[in-house]
Length: 321
Image 1 (tube, helix red, strand yellow):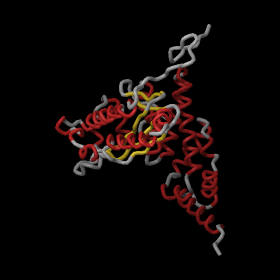
Image 2: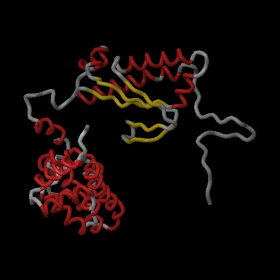
Image 3: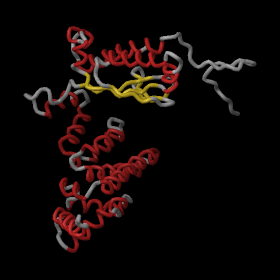
Image 4: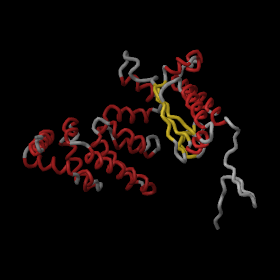
């Protein structure tokens, strides 16, 4: 059997369905709650006392906020901006938002269906007739205290985890693609490190290709070792394979030369894993094939091979007349 569940009460014979009730001005006045949440979140992030709260003055809040990206329901936007006083309503809304964000620049877009963060549930979710704001803060920032090393600053965050998680996170930060991925797979299996975390680290890694290849291999092996979660782990492995393919296809050859992304060890790993874990997208890319051809025929050094490719392309490029 099946049934339909309404998200609003419906009465027989009634043609109106009420989704939201409010008095005139409620949508604007609701923004005061947004500022309260912003102040609370910034104060909690800094760990300061009430004497250091950004609520003490507009200047204190302004010193912490860089800018804001806002989502504001298109339905609410249309309701506010319509009618003979629509322009005045929008002016009031803009002024109130500017006051919320201490005069810092903000940009808003108006979708039909909004995504936002629920602090009570600590998750992102979808809703309607909503607004949310992503605030970019200036502080706390790692570069503020120049008397400490970057590692010392990160230690304050890492020390919040237990010893096993600390060891893995330190390895990822210090060694990157050379971290112990066997240990990492154990921690990931236990739910202490998520695939999404590794996905976020990948583009920030000093050597993203070997990091992604190691991650793809790790999840590939986990899918075979733990068949009940094979679907999840295979999907994660595929993400890293796709990243390698998309990275090499999108990166200009000049950028690959400057970054030394295609070192010999990376080329070798990519070729071996192409068959072992079916990650053929990377080795089948045009850039990879061209570099390998130069490595075989001109220079065994990948950096020199890429430079030869650049020189060849420059010679073939038409000259302006």
